[in-house]
Length: 338
Length: 173
Image 1 (tube, rainbow over the protein chains, first blue to last red):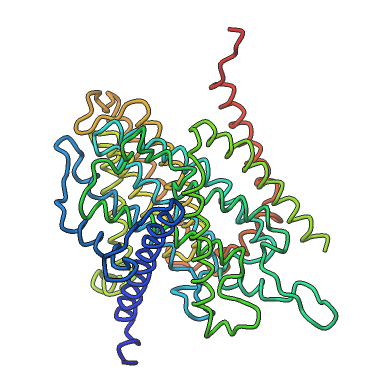
Image 2 (spheres, each protein chain N blue to C red):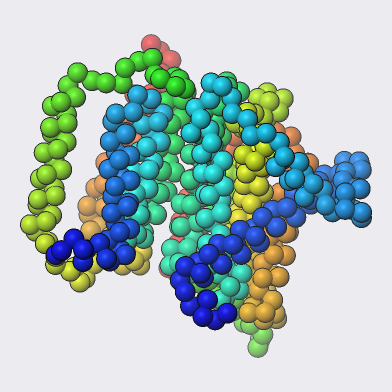
C-alpha cells in the first residue's frame, strides 16, 4: 500500500478520485438538503418515499434519471463549444478544492497563494457560462449567458476585495496559514486566551460583503437572474439535457460547497474550533461550518424575491466595491497602528 | 544539446506540449472564421502562457494571468461580442483584413527579434536571484519599483476616466 503511495502518478490518481468522490457526495447531500428544507419552509411534502425513510435516495434517483436522458445538441448549436461548456464550468469549480484544508495535513496542496489561486480558478467558470449561452443558438440562452457574465464580472471585484481584508489581517495567502492565524489568541482575559475567528476580529463587514458577492457568483436567489424561469426559461441551461445538464447542476452545488468552504476558512476559522483537536476533528468542524453556510444560502433562496438587473449592478458598484475598499483601508490602518 | 537528451527530460516534454498547444491556438485566433471561436482560442493560448509561468516557478504571475486575462478580459471580450452580434457557425462579416501580409511579416519580425535577443542575452544562464514568490514581489514592488508602480496606476486611472468620458452621453447635446 505504501509502495503504491510513493508513486507520484498513483498518488495523484488516488487524490483526484477521493476529492471527486467526496465533493460529489457532499453536493448530493446539499441537493437533498435543499429539497427537504424548501419543503419544510413552504409547508409541503417534498421527497418522501425514495429510499424508504425521509426520501433520502431522492438526489440519487434524480441523478440516475438525468443520466438516462438523451444528450441532445440543438441542430444550430455550435457543437464543440456546446459540449465543452459544462466541463469548463465543472472544472473551474472542482479546481478550487485543491487548496481547501480539512485539517492541518488533510489538504491536496497547501499553496502559498492559496486564496489567490482559489479566486483565479473560480473565475474560469464564467467563460464556461458564456460558452453555454452563446453556443446554444437560442436567444433565451444568450440573454441568460450575458446576464450571468455581467453579474459575475460585477461581483468578482467585491469578492476579491473582501478577501484582501483577511489577507492583510493574517499576513498570508495560504489557507492553512490563515486558519492558524485565527487559532492564535486574539487577546487575554486574565489567564484565558480568547481565540476568535476573523468574523469577530473586525472582519464582519468583509464577511457580509463576501457572503453577498458569493451568492451573486453562484447565481443563487436573490441574484438568480441568469436562470430566471419567468423571463428566460432556464437561461443558459435551456438547451441542456442529460449528462451535460447534470454537470451544470452538480457544478452549481459543488460551487456552493467550494465557496462555503472558502468563506468558513477565511472568516469562521476553518477546521479550527477552540477545545477540539484540529488533526482529528478538523474535517468534521469544517463540514459543520460548510453546512451552516449552505443552510443560510438555502434559507435565503426560499425567503427573498429576485432583484432586478439594474438593482443588482448598483448594489455591486455603488455599495459593495466602495465598502470593501473602506474595509481594506480600515484593516490596513489597524494592522499598522496596533 | 542532442535532441534525444533534450526530449528525455520530462519537463521539456511538458514544455513542448504546452508550447505546441499555444502556437496552434494562437494561429487559430487569427485564422478562425468565427470571432467567438477566436476569443475562445485566445483563452487556450493565455492558459498556456500561465502554465509556462508555473513551470518557471512564478505562480503569482501565472494565477494573475488566469484571474485577470481569462477571468476578466476574455469574459469582457466575449460579452462585447455577444451583446453586439453573436453568429453561430460561419460569421457573415469577413474577419479578414487586406493588409494581412504586412501584419504577418511584422509579427514574424517581432517574434524573431525577441527570440534572438533573449537567446543571445541569456543563453543557458541560470537566473539565481529571481523574484517569484508573492512576498518578494510585494516587497520589490513597493520599495524599489514604487515610482513605476504609481505611474502605471496613474495611467490606468487616466484610461478609466477617458473611458467614462467617451462612453457618457451628455444630456445637453
